Image (cartoon, rainbow, N blue to C red; front, top):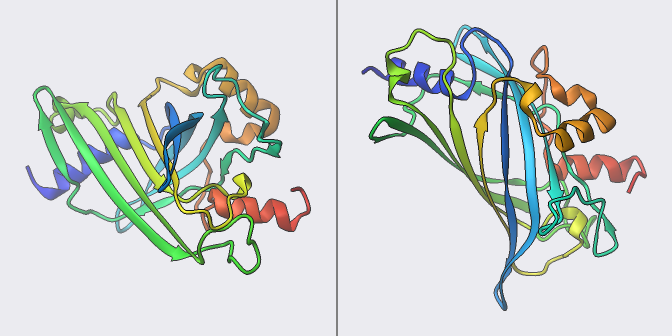
Length: 245
């Protein structure tokens, strides 16, 4: 198996080689931690990513939008407030990636394979502490994103543009801006799992209805590349700058 074969197998696992829209859905929990406190389950978490793969001269563009929602940890209902503060859900448009062939880490698991991505992040925060003392812990945004995509072993033999897939995602990040934790030590751990759906129509009704009521464009992937990407931190700042928070 060549590196090119491996890259193609990952692409048909994460998306579809024919450019068709692919929806991943995930669900899990968000835990808070700090040096003087035990881990505490603060929120449920559920989201979708709708993606389209576009071939380029150097590889692919993965065009995506993703929406995700903080849930009551017990009832799993979508929250609008937390400790009397408005909850700012995830509305990342776009959340695009440019792919060039790279050695995708692979683990064989019997009749399955696992593609794993470990992504440490560190860059200037969109929310400098001097300007956002209640909402930011550091002038550098630091996080760790850990993805695993599971596919059948036959992903290396099929001519199908897309294969069924499941996934797991773990993220360590600072407190969310809307939680107003300031420079309190600690942060959040997200722990989720999900799968590639047959179509967007399989998104759970509560989640698809919330998207339809608030931002219906998130039911589809973008049509063309745009940048920069949106994040929870840039989206929060955008709302603040517009006076909506």
